[in-house]
Image (cartoon, rainbow, N blue to C red; front, side, top):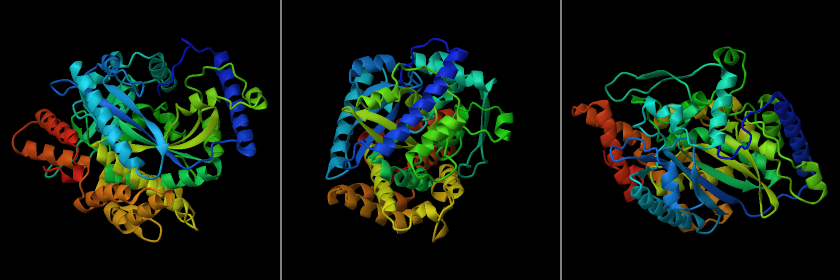
Length: 497
């Protein structure tokens, strides 16, 4: 979401020119897919981690610009809210002991950034949704000072024509009633409560569709076994509240357009695909431009001269459509490449949990793409979407549909079916035995313990409230312990309540 926008205001002519240019970029992409020339190498993985800043009282610290200046590392950048940062990790091949190297790199980088944040009076927190956020923290004045974010906010509300309604019903804490959230928002800053870990996988064009379809199949399982966002605005809601919150916080549709079946910009999709072109074509066909800024490059002139076109408008447009598995076109060292960006996972709780989540996803995804009869030919697209919502809402208590098995809890599905597949897939990628055993072992033990960041947070808050603390005090005490355990680095399934 951080790509800079240079134009202060957009005219009707700008929108028409932008629409034409986006379609021209789409035509250029179609030609590129037919002619070839994309990077074709061993699969490469990448990672983005969104972070929170808190002050001594564990309230959000609106200091991202100050902290970034102190960190002084181009891998760190702003995100939507002034209490948010994002870490973009250097991509690397998915093989050998790269996962272990990534763990060491992340530990060192986050420790360094944490020390610099402390110099500014803040603490870094890697969590799916910061539990100490309040409605006042979603005021427009806390939007990061970047023209893109302001324009994005203005455009979404101009199209919507009314305030955002956040509404969801939670899963009851032990011995309590279900809690409900219903409140109006006048900015998109509620999205700043959705801090995620985004996994990238670079693949050649002919393998993109299979990898995207496989990622869609896995989405519900991923969130069920890695949920880490149970609290929002003092309410105990879904285990992975990010999923419904992201949809509602950036929804351009008033109720009447929802009733008409207009598609949301936070989108699972509606069909299995045969090419990456299907996804970009849907983007162009269904969604108006939010930031209609036109680049001066003609993509066909670039192709005719032997250069990879930037496809700037198509990429900018793609950045304002938040698919849970997003297609990415990019250029590195003057060579174009394609990536699947997996966006369903929350940040945290620890570096080792995060790498374990990535290893499970990449391994299971690889194994699914190698099956002689693809899973998505035996599974309806609607079932995959329903799995995402069930996994996000109930975590280990969900019932997920899986072809050949029927309805099954996530932990049983992982232990019986997907974990062996993940081992096979990582082995096929050339990942070392040490890496496989280390990170998939974390997933196995997490499923046996049935403990995620979300289940731990909910159990601690419930325990503290039973001892007489009110909700605010319980959330602060829980978060303080969470930060200590996250910094210690042991995986979440070992955390005691």
